[in-house]
Length: 357
Image: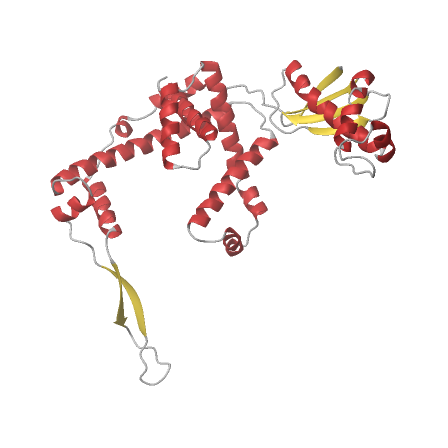
């Protein structure tokens, strides 16, 4: 079989070729048998109608179309393998020649993994890490940080009461007073009993020490995320790649799915939420397109760095993470849980590699 592979814009390719007559004709009987399985003819049992009778009952074009479908379903994977094509989308098939005793002509379009020219990610990472100031490195927890967090905790534990309070009268009718209900928050007293109720704390001093440690860890995590974001955004900006449309659409699907899940968990209908915004799903897809494009680039670039540097997640960590996921999400698919765990842990190792330049 002779085929030609043509590169198209946006990381797509077109495979054009012909399946030889003798190969294509070999699908005549299987196609007829498949179509005949559901044909009911008086005097014959279903699925047992002879070929000669089926040929007179089934239009030739239907047989030819079934032949083409069976032939390409078998030969398309072979083309992909022989040409070393990394296809990432469902093939769009166009039949260019379809007739008995003739070759089968076809054109197949599909998206492929884009070729990536990576930026000098080691140099970029090193520069960004070196540019971190001493003040940024020495993360401190101030007394204000501590007091603000304690106040937030007290507010979150406060019982809310609605109290009617008389205010300036509005003269709608003579002598009529209108009262407004205001929310009054009574903060719980911050004492040893209060902190003991929050967790395994001995007293206020013990609570403050541990809270300070937690605030410091949180600040360090925020600083790490900020640094990682700087590194990866610079690598994306300086790398060259064309994102296939299919990958952008996949990321848009994920963004909208997460948004819909969040809205539903709040007890709202997504359709009502869209009406409130006076927007359609299509409007949101346009709004989030840049975010989806960036997410698709991020995934491809991290994947490419992992490939170049031979970075893989530790198997024992993957197993533990999958166990953790399945323990907390009973209905989770084990295979998908493994893919997720492997992806998260591999990405963490890539970022650690970049940070250590």
